[in-house]
Structure formats: C-alpha cells, structure tokens
Image (cartoon, rainbow, N blue to C red; front, side, top):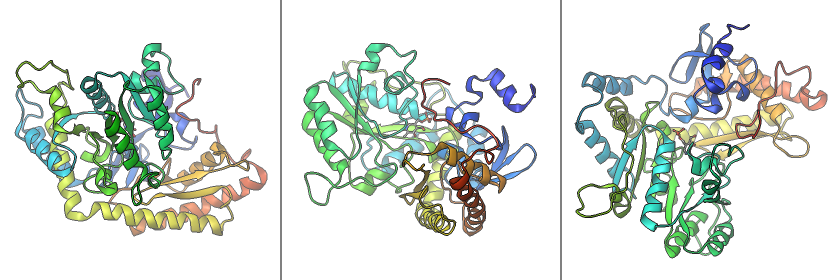
Length: 439
Ligand SMILES: Cc1ncc(COP(=O)(O)O)c(C=O)c1O
C-alpha cells in the first residue's frame, strides 16, 4: 500500500494535510483518504462517492460549496488581475462593507488566515498598552498557529520559554479567574482574547442583572486598561449578521473574523476601534510605527470579491436564520433518535443552535473517543461525514432526512458497543486529539 493516497500525502506533507484537524488520526479508517470536489452540502471522493459534509471545510464554507454567485464574483476579480500594484477598488469596497457591517469596527485589515488576524490583534494590544502579557481563554480550542498561543498548549516544542511565560490562561464563565490574573499581574496584561461562545451561550453576569459574563470581561478590561479582543472567526456572520458581539450586546476593542466570511475563499480580518487600528497607519506625522499586517496577498481581489458576494447573499437569502432553524431541528433529531435507540446515557447533542455540537461519554462521564470513532465510522458507511457539526445554507429537509437514516443505523451500532465494547466493531484505530504532546 506504499502508493496509497495517504502514504503519498504523508510522504510529501508533514502531517499529510495542511491543517492538523484534517489529519488521518482525526478520522475513522473507512473515511476517504483524499477528496476530489464538493458542491452544495456534499463532498465527493475520487471514486465519486458522495458524503453529506458536516465538516464544511473546517467551517470555512457557510452558504455551500461552489456557490455560483460567490464563485462568479471571485472569477470576475481573477479576470481583473487578482492582485494589483496599488490598492484595488474591491479592496476599498470590501473594507467599507466590513466597517459598516460590524458595529465595533472603525477600521479593518484583511489577511489570508485567522491566525495572522488574531496575532495582529495581540500585537496591536501590546503596542497600545506597552504591556507584554496575554490572557487567553483556556476553554476555547484555537486562536492562532503563532507562538504566543501554541506556547500555551500541550505542544509547546519550538516555542521559547519567555514567550510561553507571556501567555496566561483564564476560564470561560468564571470571571474570578480573570480577576485573579489581573490581581497577580497588575498593569502587565495587554489583552484578553476569547470567543463570544463555543458550546453554550455566556452565563449570567456576576455583577449586573440582565448582563452576561462577556459584559463582566468587557468591564474588567475597561477598568484595568486591557484591550478586549473578541475572536469571531467562527461566530462572525453565523450568530448574527453583525457578529456575536451584536447578538450579545458587547463592544470589543478589537475583533477578528475569517472562516466562512468568503464562503471558502481565503479571507480573514482584524478590525476594531480607530485609536487602536490606526497605530498601523502611515499618515500620522511623527507617530512611532507599528508594523501591522503587511502581506503580498492580503488583499487578493478574488477573495475580497467572494467576501462581498457572500455577505450580499447572506442578506438576501436569510442564511443566518437558516443556520438557527436547521441547527435547532438537527439537535432535536439527534437527541430523539438517541433516545429511541437507547444511547442517551453516552450521547448528547446540544449547543447554540446555529453551531451545534455532539459528544460521546463513557461510563465515567469522560469524553469517549472510542464511541465517537465508531459513530463516525458508521456515519461514513451511510454517506455522512460528521467529524463535528458545521452547518451550511444548502442543508435542508433532504439532508435532515439523510442524517436521520444514517444516525439511526449508527446509533444501533453504538448501542451494541455499549454492551460488548468497541472491539470487533471498529475497523481501525481510535481517533486522537489534535492537541497531544506525543504522536
Ligand atoms: C476561533 C478561531 N480563531 C482562529 C483560528 C485560526 O484560523 P486559521 O485556521 O484561518 O488560521 C481558528 C481556526 O480554527 C479558530 O477556530
């Protein structure tokens, strides 16, 4: 099997893919090693097998794969040269649209990856405050491939110790953990970095009736001169048209977007309050320079054209309400079938309806990678790829029905595994966490 796609991938690409969450260790052994194309809510492998795709390219596609209007916009700007020697018209249009769309944003810089956007926010915060420490939320899985974040995970190899020491952690919905950090490092924390929500809405504020944990974070930041960075990579253009910041009624100092904002084209953004963003300006006479996101491909016209087209499509077609209603029905369906098949003691679907999650637990209530692998394996047999749940606009009634049929079969296998164990049912190795210190 030395010439299998997997071998060939591993031979020339470290990890066999350009994102660790696409790696072979993240999928059951019957998952296709390689894919050829995708359209709408479906992905096709090289043998033409079709999968309903709940991975949605790591949440980078929100409308559906190869959406004609978005692709046409990208193609138009490819025809215009794709990248010019001075700023392009579409660059201005995209920036003005973004600033008008997101309430807290006065200025924006585009880039190609979310990681660079979040790292740019961190740099601005450090430049603005003259402080070095970063407080990042420990319950949120990923902010950046850069050292400031990776040094605070269990894969710190290659990150200098002083950089590791500069990132501190606090817990979501536990404002006292952020307070404790501020008490311990008064006047040293440049920024707080977190997502608005991942698995559940923010809990109630400790201090003010009717407000949330996010308001407490905002208040603490303001009081202590800390820059509040909200990472909207996933929540932006999904929770609400104006971002989760609008949904929850907060106003971060800086915020970052990416993922599905251009329906699969590579566009990410850092934006925020003018006094911070303009530290990267060049027209303010005598101001000390901050070198903020200067990249050759940052304003690639096809991507920015795709962003504008994606945004307009979202407005015209009620894409965001669709996420909420489809997600709500999907969560209900998964839990109902789980009940019917007798697997509720190990399975749960839930979360914020526009971005549901599912999880398997073992008898000690720890997350069960064995059952998750078995479930994914059985779902693949039924033509459904569900490594996690990312929704798109092109999922509708047919896709819900396909999911129901697949899940019923997958859960009957899970029920069997609950009495016999997964041995003999699993065709290959159990999936592993991306964040682990050793292979
Ligand atoms: C919340 C969040 N921030 C930042 C990133 C990094 O984005 P990218 O992979 O585009 O660099 C991710 C990617 O998974 C993310 O989920």
